[in-house]
Image (cartoon, rainbow, N blue to C red; front, side, top):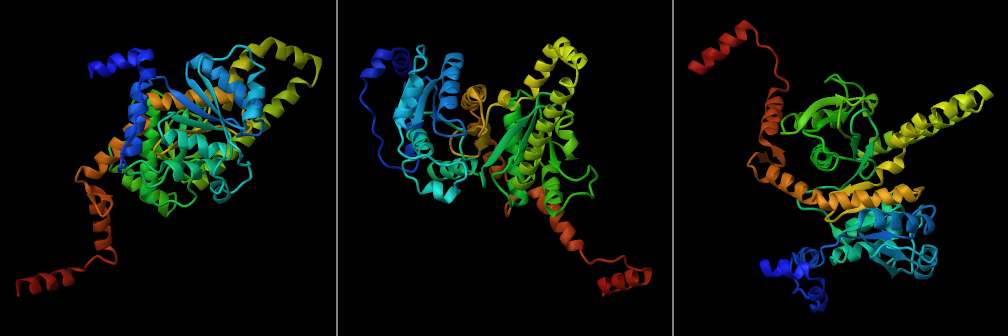
Length: 414
């Protein structure tokens, strides 16, 4: 290992090494990615330069900002001529910027199945680079459904993960609230949401730096009797885990700092996300109109604009970058389709944090421990299985009268 460390420090020696080839095997891709990371320690991010409503202009600008600020290597994947035209506008570039040509682009309204048919799309080429270990993360402001489908097709899932999920961080009175799933899985089973809870808690702890994050299930009330069959089953299972589970939470708890990780199916999570986006836009328009009403209100704005800018910065989605696709066997970040350069920059920051904190490694170990701890039976933790079994056994039982009790005792004696 000492010799390998010396090779890593000596960049000229590393550049003279021949390209290593891997024999086919079940873990060939993972081994190649690990060894590539060993010899070439600079973190590299593949950016889908053609993804988003304002690509490639905004994407290239945001990527260059990230390269300067975070010191990451950049691989811009897309139409080479268009990307190079944008790069030519910036005389001062980060030290490591590369352009990889992609002949096809995935439209924002394209279905995931149609996107998978495009073999030379910028999104697919970016994921294939990560599969080969040439980059450590993929960032795109493009079609989120296509991003998840392409990531699943190329990278596959982490061991033990039943379904990858989209995680978002929204502003709150604390360090921000994690919501998972925000749209990847419309129909879920209880064990899917239990896994989402583990993945969300790990992200909140490692990236948000929240000690023992509080986990809640999104429901229509805090009382145990509320919710539906899915939420009740999930609550039952989470109560038996080592997570800091606090029970049901409501939509208003997203912002008040009561909970750190909110778990829900993708249908509910996406509706919540779009509702919050609409409410934020409406509030902004109302405030703008109020401050433009008269001369006095305009003077009021001038006197308070610094505080208002700070509040807006805290509420701005661009500050939170993109949404991680947790559960993929790799790091994928989906940025908002209408992202500005700052949002693209922070999406790359989110990718960097996820790689450096080894979120996937923590998820794999946590789920493997849960599966291999001997506390499972037919896919359920033992405690949960015992509770379910006892409830099934008690179904249909009625309180016995004194006469029936004596009769049963007499039959037992005979």
